[in-house]
Image (cartoon, rainbow over all chains, first blue to last red; front, side):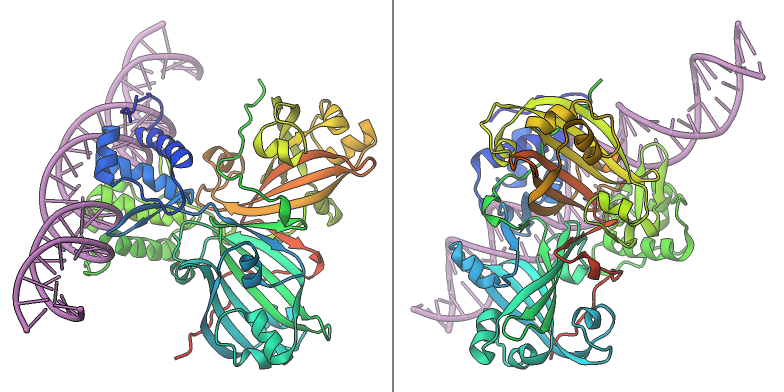
Length: 257
Length: 257
DNA sequence: TTCATACAGACGTCTAGACGACTTATGTGA
DNA sequence: TCACATAAGTCGTCTAGACGTCTGTATGAA
């Protein structure tokens, strides 16, 4: 691998970032480790600090992540998540040959207020069950979800031990939830959420607020707020099939003179 | 201002970031300049590099921004934590009594490749028209869009001068485009895009890739990549009506013991 | 075999100094 | 008065070195 030919006008770290990005996209797979910082610094003929500045950039793009004491690892290119009627996260992933884990982080009884009450079509002060779950695959968290549940769904969720929530609700109460409405926004995560998702605080999350109704009785029984890691998830509306790989800085257009 | 009392277990830069954040929130207004880096470094009794690392953190939070040659400035709070307006796409603005401006930034002929060719259902190498537009309201940009067009839409867009693209296409070619598919993701903006949107690089954008087909003939004629300022926009799927104000750190749940 | 320890290697942080690039204010000359 | 050159101040980048913290592995003792 040749040394970098420095161009004036562009910071060295920026040139190294470009070189590294190309190298990663060409030759490295998800999960691969980059060479160690001292080695890369030597290869590019720069100080380790300068190299770190370049890697900082790739981290900011969500391309790689640093793991203290181990190294720098190439991240997954991401997952396409379709927004539609169907709310089955685990089964959807399984269908695409991936194994999803759902971990129950917290279960709590609260009273509905503001947005929660409105979305669940109930009076403020009504008690609702609140679950907090973490979804991911093979130890890589994708999403952090807050579930506000009422009615039969809440009853059934009181015994939910983790794993597929869809399956549990079906098994225990014989109900299925369908997505009625979704609202999508983005933001930087709260520190605690970034920690749970094991992502840098500087990477945005996609936040989907969804209202789910019971298919059998038609009553709204769940309001979910899901935060997806922005660097691992894309949301597809309508037709998930066509969603493909393309990522990275999108095509640039030269302005007309 | 007292020197920092260093606590072991927390990086010095993190402690300085906390101190600075408190100081800014207590005593500084939007637009105020922070003391210069050497001065702050001296005040906290650390090297300038360490101080910069702390300021990097505040920048990542969107609290301040650095201006080369001038200093570090406190950003507008409203801009960062401002309430996103529910707006599906631009035309909805007019419906709600607001005036949206569309500025044509660039027009270019390119050849379709990769994702563009696939979304437009055409062979790679086929020429397409590419427009870059900036949408906003009264000088506040909120979306940057790249349009890849073909067929009659492209023909009509060659004379597009800015303003409502929908109206232009209808007037010139008598066609209307309908959204067929959407793919939503989030990311931090490219520097150039952040500049165009006049937002900090550290605030995420919502990126929507959309495929539009001609209503009259049913043929896909446009592929758009729109980047919305994440702090000004929420996307609604299905039922926009229920989208409301609630924002801010979403409800926190205390973990069960 | 099992467990605890030591060690090497990786990233994390901090310091120190130098110089470049950009902005603004100042002062000088026409 | 105006235009321009200059200087000072600010952030931006790069180098160099040191040491801390964390992880995985190898080693040795029980």
